[in-house]
Image (cartoon, rainbow, N blue to C red; front, side):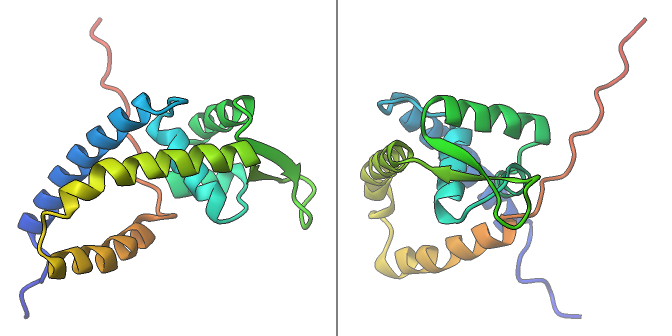
Length: 158
């Protein structure tokens, strides 16, 4: 049987990179004007790509139903998204960016590019090209696949 091409070294590198990248992105977004959480940024990004309902947004961003409700409420309260009835299903609401939401997303994306691109530019060009090809494919593989459920909390001592 052929040996798998992906092994624990690649998974370990991905986990380490994801954790460090998240920390960078969270701190850069917190310094943005206006400040955004990583969840708000990710949701604005997803909504900007395609009209979504809250349930689909939850799947694409990997958050729970109650958390996505709070997230959508915060985006709407900030004036970054609007809700409207779906044309094909009157029970469902679609989420759409406002002009201000597009401006905030563009500004935050520009900030992230400005601060993270110099780090990536230290890689050799073939590796930069490989990242440009592979990361969107990895995002697509993860997008829409909900993360594993959290385990139940441990029982409280009596």
